[in-house]
Every structure is written in structure tokens, then in C-alpha cells.
Amino acid sequence: MRVSVCHCLACQKRSGSAFATQARWPDDKVRVTGMSKTWVRTADSGNRATYRFCPECGSTLAYVVEGWPGVTAIPLGAFVDPQFHAPRHSVYEHRKHGWVAILGEDVEHSSVPSPIRRPGQTL
Image (tube, rainbow, N blue to C red; front, side):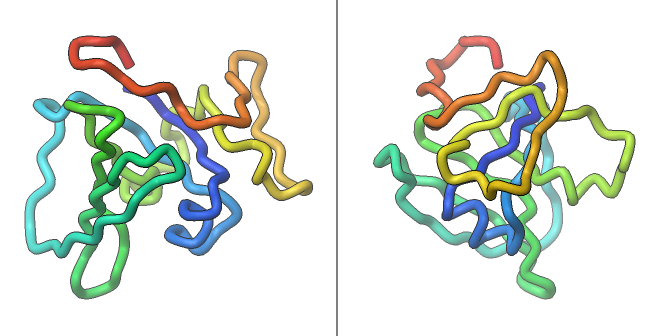
């Protein structure tokens, strides 16, 4: 599992917040049930991201990114758990709002997106 925060403008727009936070797992560990619709966009990296969202309320349920094959991301808000694991990665910090601070001694801070993940590579 990898919990991360993304400050890119697309995540800000999609989440309706100053950043988006998500947990990622191998595809075989994720099961999303029920109705959903999809939306595809091209990320700054050039990779396509495919989002599944609730057709009733519009909440993002899960998404996959071509640059992270075999991995599914789920927004933390979907878990409704204030005790969920804290993020260990904060990316696109050059687009971070000045009043936002992602705290923790073990947090990786980066102004670039996560590197492309290869199948079989650990999260």
C-alpha cells in the first residue's frame, strides 16, 4: 500500500480541494462494486488516467494511471476513517498552496510526479 498526496492542478480540480489524497494497492487486492461511470484525462506526464466515479453523487471511487500498471488508487475520503494511514509521499509540491503543510519526518516531498512504476515493482 502507498498513501500519497498530490498537489497537481488536475487533482485539485477533481477533488474540489487544495490537494488529493489516495491509497494505492495492487489491482488484485482491490474490488470496487456497484455502478460507476468513467472519465479519462491525460496527465502532465502524458499518461492516461481513468477515473471511476459514482453516477449518483459524483465522488471518485477509484482510478488507474497508465504510468502505474497493475495498481489501483482509491481516494482516502472513500474510507471514511480519520485513523487511516498518513501519507508518506507528497508530489507536485511546486503547485502546493502556500498554506498547506504535509507533515511527518518520513514523508517524501517532490515537485515532480511519482516515477513510472514497472509491473512487479513494489509500491
